[in-house]
Image (cartoon, rainbow, N blue to C red):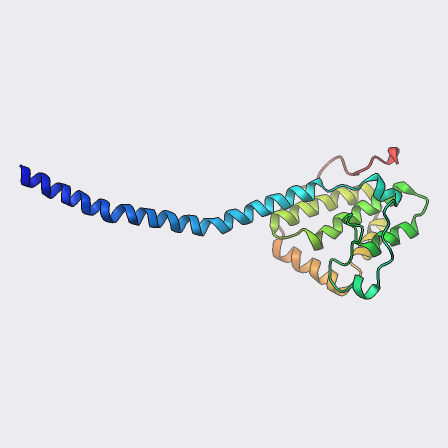
Length: 194
């Protein structure tokens, strides 16, 4: 009986000696494999939250911090362009909207909001969830303007080069997923309050 017990314990030790390290190694491999995916999901979720939180302010509409006119060569050197006042609207588009609508704050507010949301395609899209969040915001801006002529006007300001148009198409082809649009709360600023 004693010999049987010793044999059993040796067998148990051999199993434990090989299985536990194997299980620990398998667990480590899973963690190492899963970390980048988990990390990317956290980055994507943070970017979606940033996209959903970005709003036009009264200071943007009033032009309190208007940027200087950018050098066209530098403004078009990258698809994102220049945003010197860091309000999420490319400077050349922002200044063009102010020039076209120096008096109408409601039109300016709607167009600036839409320009900001279109600009996010260049600055904030890193995967499908971020593209969906940007398109949902663009839908709000589009509905805030609610005038095809004016939305086309803003789109032509933001997507004013072949590189920007091509970039938009590439991003949409790469990351497009299904989504729904908001049914209310379109404008960042209530037109009656500005």
